[in-house]
Each structure stands twice: as C-alpha cells, then as structure tokens.
Amino acid sequence: MKHIYTIAFALAFTTSTQAQTWTKVSGIMDSTDIRGIGEINNQILVAGISLASFTVTDYVVSNDGGNTWSKLPTYQYAGQWPNALPINNLMVCTNGFSISKKLVGATWQTFSGAYNFAEFSNGSIIGSASNHYDTVYNFSNAGVKGAKLGNYKFKLGSKFCNGTNNRLFLFNNGTGLAYIDYNNLSVLNFPATLDNVAMTEAMWKGKNVVDMVQTSNGNLFTVDNFGYGIFKSTDNGVNWTTVYAQSSTALISITKNATDELFVLADKAEVRKSTDGGVTWANISGNLPSISSSLIELFVNSSNELFCFVNAKGVVDPSISGIYKLTNVNAIDDILTNNTMKIYPNPSNGTFTVISTNLGKTLTVTDVVGKQVYSTILTSVTQQIDAELNAGVYFVKVGANKVQKLIVK
Image (tube, rainbow, N blue to C red; front, side):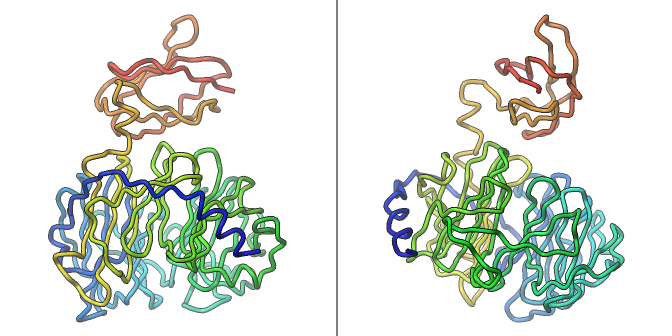
C-alpha cells in the first residue's frame, strides 16, 4: 500500500521551476558551519561552529533582516547540534550536553541545564534534562527545573510545533511524532491514523519526522525525511494523510509565510514552494548551490522574508556554506503589487494579522456607518491587531492601501 501512495502523489508533484535570486547574507559567518537560527522581537540569532573544534559556538545577531550582523561572545562547550529557540521573549540556546544559556540583550545568562526545550502556546516550558528517554520536566520561565512529567518513552528534539488548544507536537530523528495536551501533561499521545491506517506507538516511532508547521486555518504539515514526504492533518494532529511523497528525495525542512505559502527543502538545497496547501509545488531554488549537505534549513522571519542556510557536507567551504536570502521575490510582493494588503484570519474573533509595507502609517478600523472604532500605527510588515471588536462587519485601511472588509464573529 505504501508504494501505491508514493506513485500517486509523486505524479501529482509539479516540477515547474520559477527563476529566483538568492543572495548570500551570512557575512562574518561565511567560514562557519551554520547550525541554528531563531528570532525574538525582530532580532535574528544565528549559531555556527567550526568543524575544527566542537567546543565553541559563535553567535551573531541581526536587527535588519540579515543584512548586517553583530558578533556575540562565544558559547563554550556547544556540541555539534546547537539550536536557538524563542522562549518567553528570551532566546534560549541548548548545546546537546545538558548545558543551556539564555540570551538577554547581548549577554548570556544562566538557564537551568536541559538537552532541549519546547514551549506551549500559553508560554509554559518543558525540557529534556538529558539526551535520554523519560527525562522530560516542567521548567519555570526563569529556567528552574520543576516536576518530572509522565513516563515518556520519548525525548524532545531540537524543534517543536504548537497546535490549537495548547497542544504541543514533539518530534525527533528516529523517535517519530507525538503530542502533549497542556491540560494532561502526564500523558504522551500518538496520532491515530496515517492514510486511514490505524497507527501504533511503535509505527510512529519508526517515522523520521523532522519538522512541522501550522497554517493560519489550523492545518498541520509535517515532514518525514525517510522519503515518505509530507503529511497533513486537518483535525489538530489526530489523523494524517500523505499529500506528497517522493521516495528518491529526502525532505529536511518545512516552513510557511504569513500568507500560508508552504516551502520545503530537499536534501540537495532544493527549495520548493506550494500556494495550494501542498497539492502542487514549484522549484524556486534559483541560484542556490546544489550540494550534498550535512544540515540545511528554511526560516521565515517576522518581516516575511525567506532564508535558507546551507552547509557543505563534512567541511566548511566559505564559497558555499552560509545563509541565503530570497531577494528578488519577497513573499508578499504578489499581494502588494496592486497596492493591496492582506488580513487574516477572516472571519476573525476580533484579533487578526495585517500584512502591509506601509510602515509608519495609521491603520484604521471603521464600522459599516463609517465610525472609526480602532486605530494604531503599523510598525511591522506583518503585525497582529487585537482590536477587541464586537461581532459585525468592519473595514480596515492602512495608508494608501485599498480598503479590506473584515468580518468578526
């Protein structure tokens, strides 16, 4: 049955290529093996190591979308797989050896040791106390280890994904896919089905799930890089279906932008884009170096810009390794070509996100009789608006952008 799915979905894949230009922006990190990236308050943090010594990690920050970088103090005993995660408005970095620190401004501060961390959408933190199964604990916002959670035969990976209703999805190379509900921390759950086949815990642990993303409508997309491709769930991760499979190419990373365009990264630095929820894909690799790599990653920052970082396998090659930014096609250009903007979700509960390049302009919300009920200054290309609106029909405008209708239920 597995081969039937593979053939069917491989035929559905669109192999069209769109000309794209990627610009290398890693600067002072060009001679470093890039290993981790994250963002807090528009500040991008990048971690990289020298293959000559795994005991030191260099960190740099950028406040201008990766155009310029400032170097931070090195982080000792970094290990081979450092990662950067935003935790409660801090950047917490773990290093693979039960040592972690938090970045406050440009200073490293003590944070209780853990192998990896994950954060519920309500801000609660859990962490693995070591690189072993059954070592998952609660952690305070200050990094103090609390009570041990359930008897998990599972360990946290370097990534996680939030679902709806405070559901946290965990995945790791070789340990599959599981989830925890915040209202029942003692139980580790495994999804029920894949392609209408009942799945056991052992069957999920046989999957090599490495990345996941949730779109604004609540759908989840996850990548299994054993070659089985991309799975999709429309019910908060209980049941999954294969939307793309290609046995010849391992998929390594998946991300999305503010308009729910999906991007996946294959194992030879090939970036693919889908605008229809994973049904069809276009190759947007452009001038990215096509290499066999030890680690490559996709990342979208708060300004909706797409980055790809590439490492040459087993070596640091300054002519190849580094951070690349998609520069000739901003992910929101199509939306803004006709001086429009994007608002989502729509209908809304009164909180919505607006995408517009009219930074510094006033965003106004008016009701059906033209009365202004809310206003604010747009300070980010992608900005969440909490207008606390009653149910009804409203009109949103930013600067010279065309008016958009908003329905609040």
